[in-house]
Image (cartoon, rainbow, N blue to C red; front, side, top):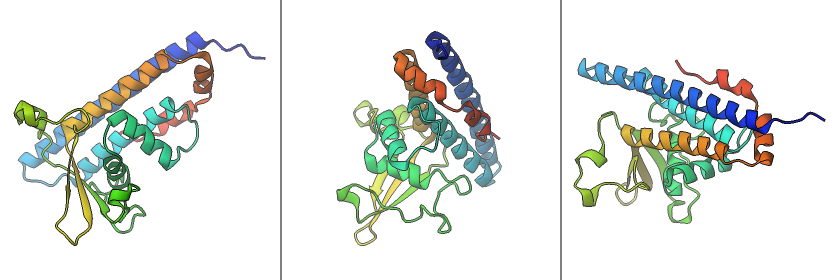
Length: 221
């Protein structure tokens, strides 16, 4: 029977998770600067915004595989649950984020040719509402900076704004802003690394089985 060096597994995955996260966060920030420059030139950065969002979801997907010790396809309900724990967002917000923004081709995720168009929340309160999500194009918009203290978003509220459309439309709009999303990404990275540090031998043995071949397959651009 092969002897498993748990200390070696732990160190290798901590190092790998840190380096991969730093690499992808660098590319996300790079896309942000490109988008801001294009806005200054009165150009619409559709492709750059799509790539920025795709890189955000790439990093989250990678961290979920590591944190959930999953070397295969992660079921939708499992990644929704994981994101809910990581972000502290209400379930309907997590669902809007995952269903509507993860499409790499449309920065709003509102293209009817995609299967997640017109998705509804699983929460009874919002079952009749169609989920629509959008990404605020002003990448410097940050309520934590300009709002008075009593109106600043809590950790649970950070990263999104939501509203129900006028009566009769049955649409729940959720708007995500860049600084809050980046803060959530850093929380996801730190949580995943902390969970590796605190993992017992059984959990580390499962981590050993996670397919490292997934790492170079994620798009960076």
